[in-house]
Length: 243
Image (cartoon, rainbow, N blue to C red; front, side):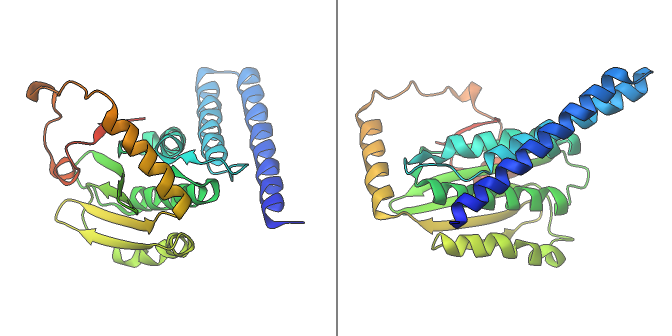
C-alpha cells in the first residue's frame, strides 16, 4: 500500500478516535451533577475540539491542486489557539502574503509551523510580559520565508534546541533550512525554502494580478498598530491580524 494511503488511513482513524472521545466527554458532562463537574468536563471537551481542529489541519491534503498557504496556516493557527495557546494566555497573530504551494509541500510547511509555534509556547521565557507569538509568511522572488517570532527571552532555549530536529528534517525535504535568532526580549526562528518551477509560475501570476488591481486606500497613521519589539521586526506593509 502506498505511503500516502497509509498516512491518510492513520489520520482518518485518529480523527474518528478523537471524535469518539469528544462524544463520551460531552455525554458525561450532561450526566454530571454539580456545576463544577459539568464545567470541568466541558473544558475537556473544548480542549479535545481544539486538538481535533489541529489534527484536521495537519492532514495531508488530497489531489494535486495548488493550495493557498496563508489560508492553510491561519486555519492551523485557529486550532492551536483553541487547543493550547488561549489556555496559556499566549496571543497568536499573522503577517502573510498570498502564497501558492503544492499540496504536499504546503502540508510540510504546516507541520513545521506547528512544531515551531509549539516549541515557542513551551520554552519562551515571557517573564512579566503578555505572551505573543507571530507568524510572518512572505515570498521574495523564488524564496519563501516563514518567521516565527515571540516576545520571550533566550534563557531555557539552548537545552530545547534538540526539539527542533524534526522541523529541520522536514525543512530539508522542502530544500530549505531553519535558523534561530535571539534578542533581549524576542526570539525568532526562520524557515527559508525555494519554490518549485510550478509554484514560481503560479505565484508570479498572482503577483501580476495584484499589481493590476486598484490600490487600497492607505491606512491613516491613527489606525496603525502601535509599535513594539516584535512589530518593529515585521514589515509594515504586510497585513497583521489574529485568526
